[in-house]
Length: 291
Image 1 (cartoon, rainbow, N blue to C red):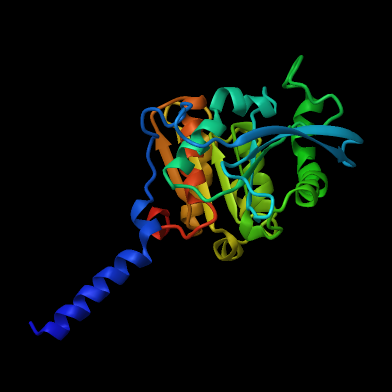
Image 2 (image 1 turned 120 degrees about the vertical axis):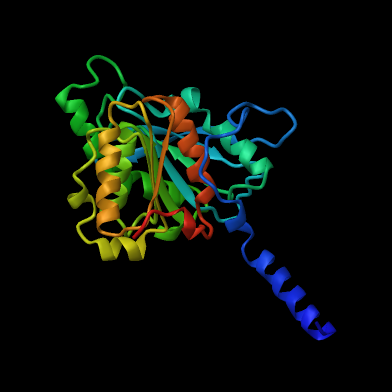
């Protein structure tokens, strides 16, 4: 082989490695030991409480917000809206899922893009505390009402107070259980607002697949990532399975991750661990289910 050909082959090899660094690192798997544990020797993000006026509900509402390590008010950030379950509130993720530790650790490893994470109260009603009968009809309805509160009140507030991108390509939504159903309903129902959608153990509030994806071609064109995960022993796995089966039928690329576990934070933390690493950057298409 001539020296010129050898040089050309070497250049091609180097360019191939440089062109796909993100792809080579992207896999879907359970988080390694300690992925959700506080580490002393790394930089940490910050959790704050915010208060915004909700015209939808008719009063002021609170949410939590995570800003990443090294947060700079002069930098523009994408946003992930992370939703809780039927019996929870914004602190459910904070205490049960420890997203701040998961993300801090991933930042230290260079595996996630800098982003702001908003943890709202997905129960859009004046008394939005998770007290009494959480299955009460009025409280269930409040989870649907949150779509208007999110789109018309919370997102505009975040975009007025923080330096964030205001386009769909830089906006993601995900959640656990009831919040997973909300994420599918709101994310897929508002593709002009969200390009990244994740559902961890989606609950029965999830709409039927034909209603979620009435226009498969539009979904294929507009979605960056649709991520669905569930535990193999979860009694609600049918909600995830039927959505997955329909997506395969209509050939909408998506990620479907079934792991050992039930309807619990072990599964939900792994969902966040994997989903967050895919956000706001090129994604390895080999991860997707499609025909």
